[in-house]
Amino acid sequence: MKRVIGLMLFCFGIGMTLLLFIPETISTLIFIIGCLVLGYHLFCC
Image 1 (cartoon, rainbow, N blue to C red):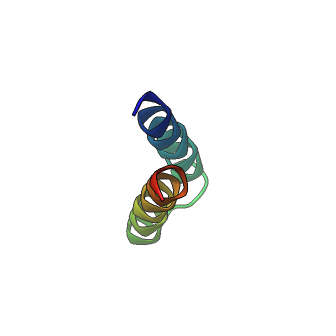
Image 2 (cartoon, rainbow, N blue to C red; image 1 turned 90 degrees about the vertical axis):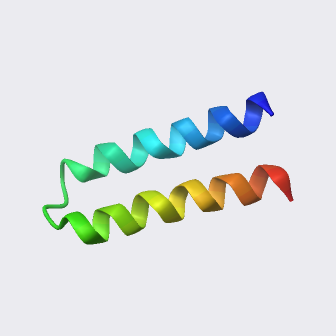
């Protein structure tokens, strides 16, 4: 469970970093959610 939480936090950090470079908030929000979901599925399934 610690690995999953760590990966999710890492992906969230990457998403928030890209938020600084992408001015559109909706596409950035979709990217952050997609990154979190992908990271969760990679470590759980």
